[in-house]
Length: 344
Image (tube, rainbow, N blue to C red; front, side, top):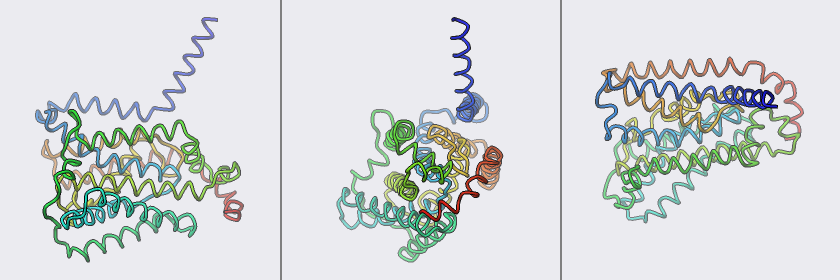
């Protein structure tokens, strides 16, 4: 009896290790970096730098969780950086012209929902490739921002209540970190405890099987793109609330490259670009690892050009691992695609 129980515990432990091997590996790597960091830069573990690291990571992590939902269903969204740009421009313009904070927030959230709907409708009902759809959406939104602003910054008197969203604290934690915590808890609960989470995963695994089991595949995919755009909107609001101004040509103010940062966090966290694989926790750890490296590199004298090279290599390695682990998953879907497309 005792031996049987021990075997059961061992089997459960093996399954758990296999299921969360990516999360465990990233956690170990983060711990190693934190242990070695004082030898590389004494300033890295200072309180002020760690708070700044958490704040900066929160922006990326919130957007990455949204990207996670899209990648989970086998899609991609290259427009979240441009979404953050247009959110920054609209919110600051409204606020400096006297529009109440609550109305500004509702307006930009509405814009985020609209962007997600456009992307999702073209992908699901138009049956266009997500890469093409979101790339076009990105170009259109960036064009709108540059035409409206002329490439110039947008600044003025912004209400203090709005600024506190980006610069304030709840106890000892920056507001963006608290927002990230709430979003993370809600997302983990949705993925592990709700029917919606199971539908997202089965849709990414096999759309034919999902359809045959009664899942409204189109609505599930559409909702993923809406969530992605809404989370990008929240990230953009928190980011622009920190500075109280919008600059379309800067990396952070203009959110240039945010989509790549988000994709990197999701893929490094163990998600497969082919869909169905990955966890919210893995995405958070991927964003944290990416944020630590981005914060540490300048402190140890690595140039921005070299940073881009190293970060690109990290993404490449993660994608190769992802693709290798997903070989043989999609052929079955392609053989059955005709029946799925006929019915949907």
